[in-house]
Length: 53
Image (cartoon, rainbow, N blue to C red; front, side, top):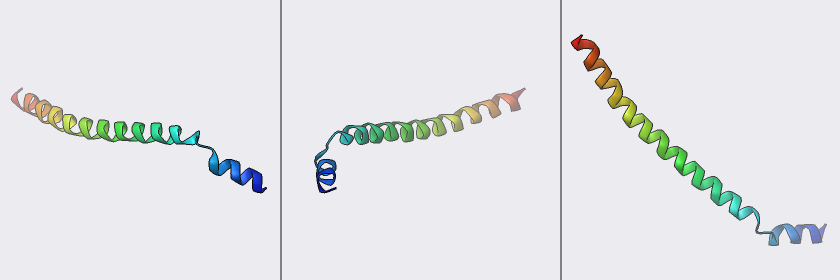
């Protein structure tokens, strides 16, 4: 049991996965923010065109 715990503590392979997950999370958050901003502008433009007809 002690050897297993020691190997798990020294194992560094999971660090890369965590880094990629953090990068993916940041990209998703940025995409949501951009889509929210652009979506509001598109909705305002659509409403303007709709009211002018």
